[in-house]
Structures are given as structure tokens and as C-alpha cells.
Image 1: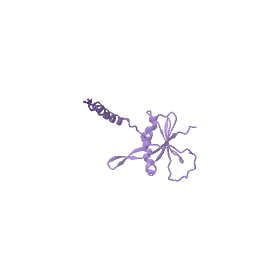
Image 2 (image 1 turned 90 degrees about the vertical axis):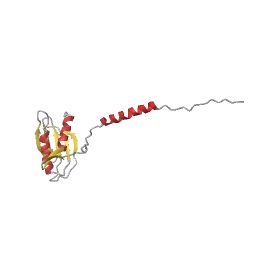
Image 3 (image 1 turned 120 degrees about the vertical axis):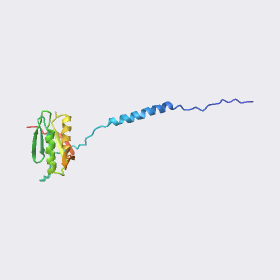
Image 4 (image 1 turned 45 degrees about the vertical axis):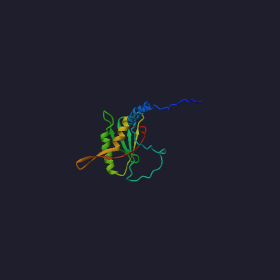
Length: 163
């Protein structure tokens, strides 16, 4: 007696549609990943106990820039006000602030810290512009103008209330 068996063909996977999808999807994901980077500014927050006793040295600068609506008050936390820079019609005078920061950097070349204290109604854009003005300056070396680091370690906080 003859036994009849069914012939089964081997199933082939059809993956061309999946490969087409991957070919289109991978470049798309790679190209959009480049545009999702965020600009980040490294900050250090002030210490919780701001009333702590500090040893005062004659050459110790603790630079504070208070951003007010009518002026920028540049001062030393211990020594007091250094200079008050009145605001212009377009906002704070950032060129005068950078010039003063360059002068302070020549007197205190080892200092990198500064605090930016802003009033509650100060715009974010203004705070970032002030931070950029004290972070980097320009120095003339020979016949070239070179960017130099002024006070890159910036802390932010609330401005003291006016009396």
C-alpha cells in the first residue's frame, strides 16, 4: 500500500517591507536628533547659610552684580558698592559692565566667581545677557583681539530689597 504524503514548501520570510521601513526611519531619526540639543549654562547656587562667618582677606573679591530695573549695581559682598551703572533706554549697559569686569579681572586674576542677583520682575533674557557680559571679555594682544575668560563661575539669586 502506497502512503501519500503532502509536500510542504518551506515558508520564506518577506522582510523587504521591513527593510524599506528601516532605511527610511533611521536617517529620519538621526537627522531630527541633531536639532533637539539644549543650550545649558552651568550654574552654582549660593549656599543656604548666607550669614556664615567668612574670613576677610585684603585681596579677597566676592563679586556681586545686582540687576535692578534702573541700574546694575556692581559690588563686593564684603567691601560694598564698587560702581553703579545706570541703565540705557534699551536695558542694562552691558558694555560698561564688561569693561568694569575686565578691570576687576586685571586686579584679581585668580578670581573666577561672581554672583548675579536679580529682582523678581527681571526678565530671563536680561539675566542671561548680564551673565554673558561678565563671563567672557575681549583682550588686545598685539594686533589681535582675543576672547578671555572673566568670571565664568556664576551663581544666581534674589536681589536684596531696596530700603
